[in-house]
Length: 170
Image (tube, rainbow, N blue to C red; front, top):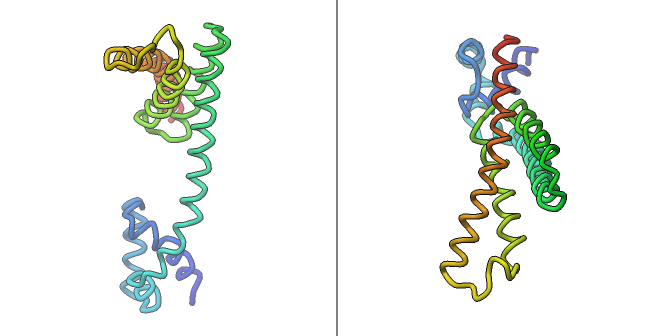
């Protein structure tokens, strides 16, 4: 087994997921055409074992960002400091975009936790919900959506700065 075989073995899970660049795909396919061992490995299910460590690492980072988002949601709800709320969500949006490079993930991670926190925080508040009628619950959901959208706007502004920074540094 050559050094090229060990490289191709590491690339096979990404090759199967079609997550490689065109030149790397060409390299892997040329090697598979000439190497029976790697070709058998590529067609077996054994090569899928390599993807689990990457998945658990991504899951850990997802949880970290979601916990941070909940912390920001609680912080902005409890302390009511408008300047730190704006700055913290802009920084959070910027960092989230740098990490994921996907604006939809920035939206989801900044919107969902704030929405959930706003509903949980106000569901038993007699100022908002008294008899749990459809109208009161609807009003609570609309209010929670409004708060979540405000938070998300600042996160998206931070993400916009990250996008501009990435474009200017390329």
